[in-house]
Length: 319
Image 1 (cartoon, rainbow, N blue to C red):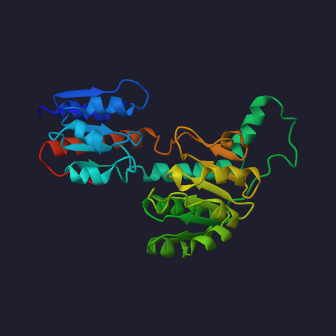
Image 2: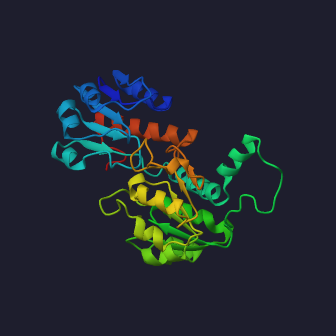
Image 3: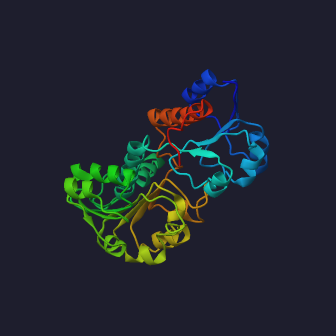
């Protein structure tokens, strides 16, 4: 097919190679940075398809620049809060994402954050590397037990369910809150569906797995943090704005909660002032899906969504 496709940032080779087999022209942003809005508008002009990332703000101006011949914007992400879906609908623009493929990787990362924050892994690693460790002592780097504790899941969808099921090896009591009942968790884990307040008050570990929506923005703020145990650990591998980051900094500074493990931030790529100076924070740069297999699959699915649409077939993963 004689199609012209633009890719907003370098992606795994498997996705690019798939597009090269089916499309005439492929252009990739060669720089390891997010395009400015002006650059993005200029680069999408006249394209038949665009493969974009969650760091790209895709709005009506971008769609207008792409032109009526453009058939699809394929988002290489499971989330799509970077896309103006109303504008896409108005212009009959097909928009796709890459759900399912990163469930295991994201759930695994949430567990990595939980263990690292609970057992003070990053903090103690830095101390060991500093050369200041005096030798074993009974009061050094005291953390939280994980086995036989209570795990709270906020958002029991695909990834939340995946994350919760992995707790079975640690014999944890599982609480969850969601708009719908999760019979799988109740059957396999004996999980209990409870109110948000009850979950926050009762859980030793709270892990966030909700999509970013107007009603979930700042879902966790000063009030919610105040309900948690002062020994509790908060984990976020979903979307940064679900937590009021300034309130989290205050809660961690004042030891309202014990620790946090974060992979996402409210104003990425920046973190709230003071957050990264805190020793009771494990902070990773949005790497939950960063495994070789997962990123390759994400790139390939995004590319296949494009080639399916350009061939006149329905997309694999329409939003």
